[in-house]
Amino acid sequence: MKECFKRTVIFVVLLISACGQYEPLQAQEDTEASPPPFGRVPDPTLTRYPPRSAASDEFIGHRFVEEKGQGWGWVKRPRESWHKARWVALKEDPFGAIAPGRARMPKSTDDHNMRYRLWGAFWDRKVYDPKTDEFLEVFILDGWEVIGPDSPPDIPPGPQERTPPKKRDQATKKRVLRHGIDR
Image 1 (cartoon, rainbow, N blue to C red):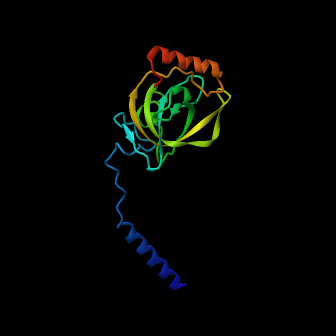
Image 2: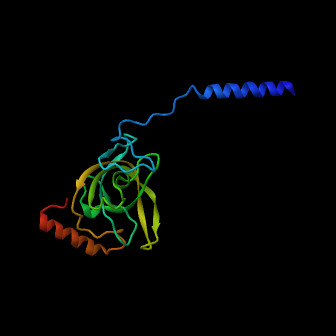
Image 3: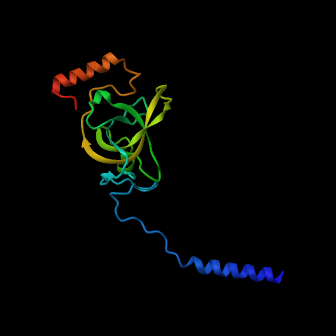
């Protein structure tokens, strides 16, 4: 019994003495390269969250806040026209890349009509939006960079199934005739 008590006292003394030897983790000084953790005030000067993997594919995203739905906006490849863009929901990682608007703005909808360079990939599954009774494609966000404000593409918001192909093609043709290109 006395031997067990001695071992317990020695263990507690060693444990207490070891606690003072480690310093707490220091906050990263490079705020431009690190996303704000949950509970921190958004930083409007944050313009970039680099991808964690060099193998991430690059995309262009246009944030569009739709009143009746939960989608994030359109995502397309850099050299594709906007009529090939996909309406997506973003999959964020609280310990990695979070949506640009959530990281930069007081309200996550304050980045309406902002254009971003995105890194990531499309998920092979879809998510359900109960507000519109639709399934949305999912983009797994790995990193982002602000391009700047821009007017929305001339395509209707929402997944392609919501808008008949004929109307979607007509919107693209109007843009090409009006501007000469479909950017």
